[in-house]
Amino acid sequence: MTDLIIELDKFLNAGGFVMPPLLFATALLWYGLGYRFWILRRNGRSSPRKLIKKGLKADITGKKPRDLVEEAAMIGVRIKQGGVSDLRRCLDGAFHHYESEINRYRPVINTIVMIAPLLGLLGTVNGMIETFNSLADMALFTQSGGIAGGISQALFTTQMGLAVAIPGFLMKSMLDRKQRRIQSELNQIKELLCIREH
Image 1: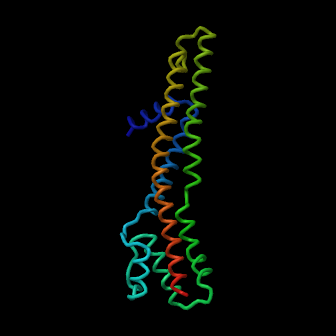
Image 2: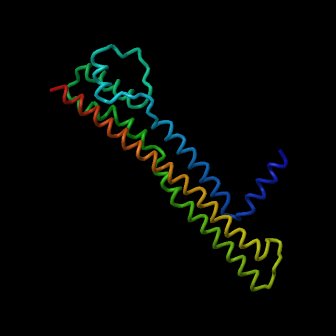
Image 3: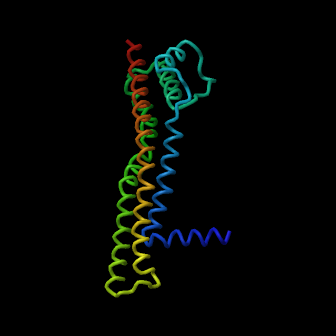
């Protein structure tokens, strides 16, 4: 346990003052990505049309939905079977929860993916300042590492910023595609239920 703390301390010191916020941003990024991955999963293979057909034909009250789209379809069918006067408004109100749920953490992820390389760049600038200060003082070796320490910090923070941003961006792009597909399916469910009303 002590070795782990020593290694963590070395890791944090290698990047200077930029490392704590960068590690916090990394943890928040992967929490948000994990949450979105879980919410945007699509376990059921049925299309919105099949889900509605199945729901209108059979009693679905006892069935447990496998994902968000199936749950939305079940809610939509129940609202329709309830015989409400303004079906479209009721569906919009009921589906608002799902639409906000599939959007959750998206702005946070976008922000972190954008600022992680900038935090890395800030660490780079700080490392280069340390390097030039060492050159000005002709101090090749100091407590903070001198020239070698400054260059090491500059490269380490740049690497860390990119290591956070690149996988985060790739995961974000994949999840955004899934979100667009689910949003489209939710819209289809509403449209199909409203068409069947007439």
